[in-house]
Image 1 (tube, rainbow, N blue to C red):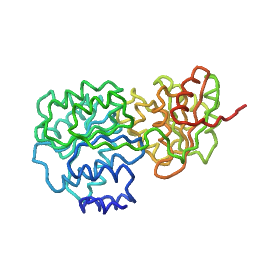
Image 2: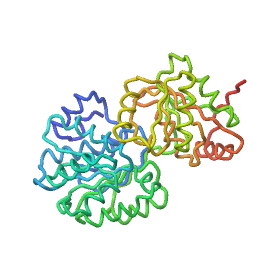
Image 3: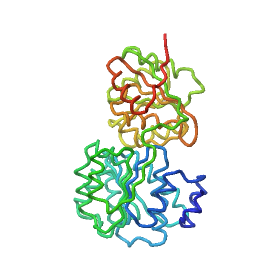
Image 4: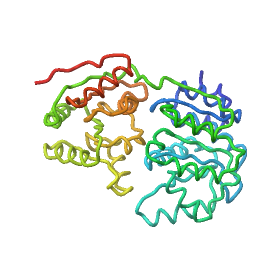
Length: 374
């Protein structure tokens, strides 16, 4: 199947072609017709499956055919992180190149100018608002956000938003929306709390579920059994002087550990940067731009910050700590082998983390290859 068979708006097809997209992914094939029909949707698909385009393409086509009333908002996309909000806003610009569409990313930060820019855009109205829950709710409470003609609500990475404690903010936002709307929920996992939320906000939804629990086959997975004191030295040996490993993403569980890893790698003359919540938003965006442009080799991040990173051609993912949730493991290693390329994912496991590794292997239904080291 190709995109022209999905009954998308011709101008959207031009945008798809300009951005170099080939054939639709499975989530796009299944979700786009449902969205074009106006049905509510709950879709379970892991990172890297093309879910952003799955909801943006049909929504943009609808906007192209029925312009938004000035001063109002047509579509609200709620996401867990600033990085994901910016990423989706950028994709809107690309796909909508041949149509007249307005969009803005609304997220928190310490920059007073960004608040003023967001307020002005919200007062003027826009076709698409991509927002983090807390910041959007702040704007709504000021009384100038017109949501009563909203036609589409999209919750992206719903499971992560609930994990981050946004349930109350999300329900407060939804209470301000018209009941007659199309609601789309995308989630990488489907725990009971997500199903409960879906029951309260979706109307007779179509359900789509795509291989959530399995990493793509093109990822070579391996485990090193190490003590904590050995981890940094092992990481250095894996990346130092390796010209064929140009892009490395290291996951650590805590912000302080992220900073410590960055400091120790730089001390060994390894080009590394960390991304964490202590950085200003502009600094975080610059780090991501530099990483995309291969200006440094190693990016160190926590799960929550890295969830919004959409960067292709990552050669190696390293789990410096074993994630507590097997599905987080799938998300982490899914950052490599994007866009039909191959990738490598390595996990460092100390004695205390072995039960977590066992849970991951049970979840995957296979034993991850052990690598011996001296």
